[in-house]
Length: 119
Image (cartoon, rainbow, N blue to C red):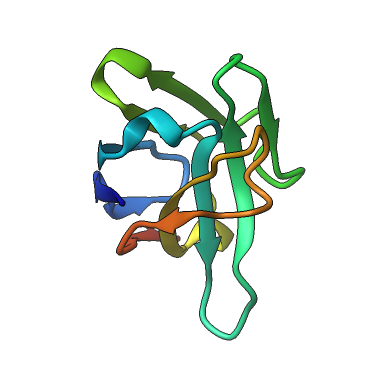
């Protein structure tokens, strides 16, 4: 089993920045892609950003140019740097990992961290 622990959420004003972190532990050798989904109230969970073991990244169109994703394989950690935050970025952000090279099939979810962007 893989366990995921997220940190870094909070309240920020529009235009501000936050960095989310997610540390994986357990059977981390099985992990390929890592990344983040988010779910806003009344909306479906959506993929925000992903990075695979080869370093290839994928972003939702709504965050391209504002968010970056990186990973430290030695620390089994993935980061989401969120800049120029908008009110519509408000959501619960979930760390996710996959044994495949994309994050479309999620093997394990984190508990979620709230990001609130105020106007």
